[in-house]
Length: 124
Image (cartoon, rainbow, N blue to C red; front, side, top):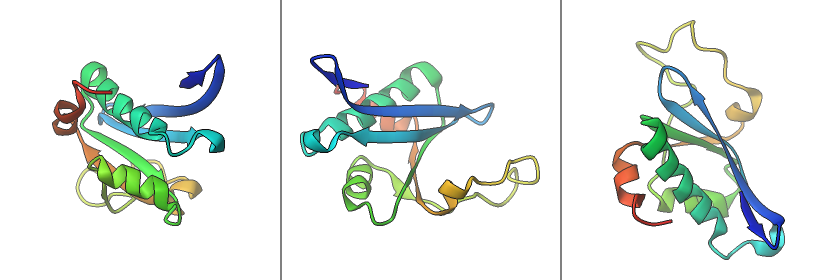
């Protein structure tokens, strides 16, 4: 969560699918009056560091609306790449719950951990 004078100006929410080690950004927002100041980027870098340091996650996913150019640019600039969702192939059979409707309407971007963690482990 990002705050200024006790007012929340941004947040990022994470969840993990166990035991796969795949983390998902379930929400990322910065108040409109505070956008363009690097807050979203700092929140994303902190999420990368957190999942790398404490969780030993394998992958960090984020679902972004294709028309959200600012968020797409931010994610791509931090090393996220578009991937197919839901995944298919061995290990992605019936045991996986169906993709949520919101996931199907967004572009799935993925970041491989811990390689990305080492890139952002010394900065915020």
